[in-house]
Length: 277
Ligand code: 13P
Image (cartoon, rainbow, N blue to C red; front, side, top):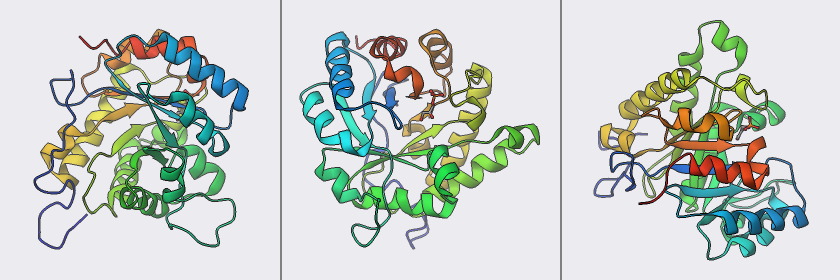
């Protein structure tokens, strides 16, 4: 994170760290749908239609993360709407002999503004290390994509009292390669034990983890950057539990998996994050 001049490299001086919004005027809520490896084109297009029709002046900024083959179709289907597009992963290199991988420029070319980095399913299924995730975040920045850096402890780590140690290691490693320009990283706290299990973190547990992550962000990047960075919660978010989680001052929105596949549930979660007034 050092820029060689002694101060924090991120965010760059002179650029606003904060995004305007109703959260104390500092952080606009952000709600994202991570479709994971679900939906085919026909289903994806139906989802886009339903969500577009159902959106009523959301207070939140909205992003959808489809599988790679769906990106062009979804880009077209959400054009002119309040939804932005993101990729679920990217390779740290801009191009090259990396069969099966996708680069930042390719994501940009497909209409993406965002990209997930270090989702726990990538760490689990593809052995992604903290160091690799840091290089992906840096690549996202280099290619003009907004990274959502995903962190979260596994159940046995929480049970062993290692939650904060894991979160600090993942967060600091994820930020290592950032040098400055877009300065609009979001962080997603996704406790692995809560993903797809129905075992949602309690509002107090989420608040505690988010407050800790913001403290580490402050140490790494300065207080202003930390105050302007959205920290999302992910892990069995539903329309039933979203409002109580969002009521926590450090919870700035959600990264929703299973429930996001149902347009009605996704819309209800968005509504739980307030309306633009
Ligand atoms: P679920 O909402 O299905 O638990 O998934 C959370 C997640 O991993 C979002 O990235």
